[in-house]
Length: 618
View 1: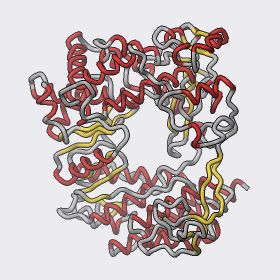
View 2: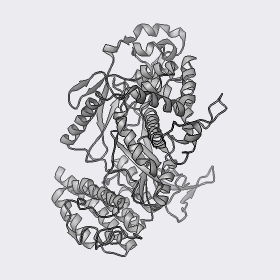
View 3: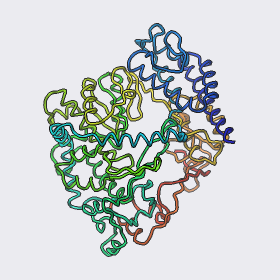
View 4: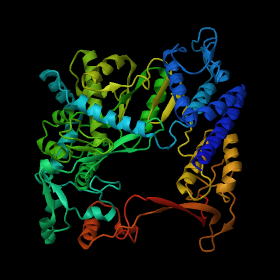
C-alpha cells in the first residue's frame, strides 16, 4: 500500500514536471523530450529524492555558474556533458552559456534562466518527512554549533567597544525608549499561538502555574499575570523557579525540505509571554521613522525590516540590474548570535538589558538526541520571540563595523545615513554595497558568523533576497510546489496548497500548466472551481477573464458563486474564570468578542475543513 502511495506521488510530480517542461520549451523555442525521459527514468530508479534533492542541487550549481560567469568544472555532478555543458536541460543552457568555452553569453536568455530554475527548484521545498538519519544529523548540527559557540568571545576589549559604539549609534534611541517602557511598567505581555515547552496550549496559557525568579525580579507575577490585585491569591499557586530548576526550551524539528528539517526551540509559556511583550514595542520602534519624544530621525528605520520583505526584494532587483548591491546569506544565522553580542549591545541600557536577559532561556533539551544543554551560549534559537529582531540588529551592527573598517574612520550619524537604500537587513537576508563585500564578510567572520557563499551573490547579475530572485532586473523567481497533490477532498491542507500553487502558476504566465492542473486534478478534487478575484474567500481560479455570477444574493443584491471555502477548526480549549478575565482585560489585545466562543476554543488550528458555499466572487 505504501509502495502504491509513493508511486502515485512520483507519477503526479513527474507528470507536473513534464507539463512544465513542455510549456517552458515553447517559451524558449527548444525541445525537452530527452529531458523528460531522463526525469522519468531517474525518478523511477532513485525515487522522490531525484526531484527533491538531486534537481535542486543542479539548480544551486546553476546559480553558482551565473555568479562566476561560466560553467564550473565541478558543477552538475552526476549529469553527462557535451562540449562542457550538461546534456540535461541543454536546450536551455545553450541559450545561457557558450557551448565553446562554457562562458556566459553576452545576452543570455532570461526566459531560459527562469526555465532552468523553475524546473530544478520546483520540488525543492515540498513538505515531506525527512529520513531518520537526516533528522538526527540536523539535531547533531544544532549541538555542534552550540559547542562551537562556547569558545567564541570578543578578541579584544577594543573590538567589544567598537561593537558597543556602533550598535548604540544605530539603536540608542530605540533602546532608550524600551528602557523607559520597562522601567515605568508599560510592557503589555501576550501569548503566542504556537506550542510551548511545558505543553500549555490555547486558553490554558492564561492560567500560568510557573514563573521564573529571573522574570520576577523584573516583571512581577502579580503585575503581569493576574487580571487585578483582587486575585493576589493566585501567587500562592505559582511555582517560582530558580535558575537551576527553570524549564529548558524543547528543541524539535519541523518540515523544511526533504534534504533537512528545520530545527527550532519551543519556549516555556511564561517566557514566551514576556518575550512577546517586549517584541511588539521593539519592532514598532525599530520600524518608526521618528520615535516619539525625539527631534532627530531614527537611524534603524532605514536599514531594518520585520513586517515587509518588499524593500529587500527591490534592492535585490536593483543589485541584479546595476551590479552595485550584493545579497548575502548566513549559515546557522540565529544559532550563531552569541549572548555576548546582545549583552554588549545593551550595556548602557541596564533596565532593558535586564528585561531581555530575564526573558532569555538558558537551557535546552534535545529529545532527538536525548541530550540536555546547560548554560546556552547562543542568545536564542528560532522559537524565541526576540530571536528575529535581535539577530537583525546584531547583523546590521557587524555590517557597519565592516564598512567602518574599510572607510578607516569612525562612523557618524551622517555617514550611516548615507547608506540608506544601500544596506538592508531582514532576518539573515543581508544587502550591502558590492565595494564593501570583502570587508563585511571579514567582519561577519570575526564576530562568529558564517557566510554561505553558495547562496550569496555579488559578482554576476543574479541576486536573491526574501523570496525574490532576479537576473539583470528580470524576476526569475520559480513557483514552488509546497505539498504533494491531493487524491480527494479528505486532505484540505493539500487542496488549499494546490489551489494556491495553481494560481501562482497562472499569475506567472504558465497558463498551459495551470490548465493541465484544472483538467487533470481540480476536476476530481474540486468540481466547483469558479473564476474569482484574489480577495474572494472562495477556493477558486485566478484569471484575467471576468468572473461569472451564478446567482444573486436576495438580501444584498450581490453576485454569488458556488465554491469551496476553507474553514479552520480551532481546537477546544475552555478557559477558567480567572483565565477568562485575564484574557479579556489584557490591554491592546484584539476584540475578544470577534469570536463568540473564544473562551471555549483557542490556539492554532490543527485541522482545516473545506465547505461548499455560496460566496462572493470578489
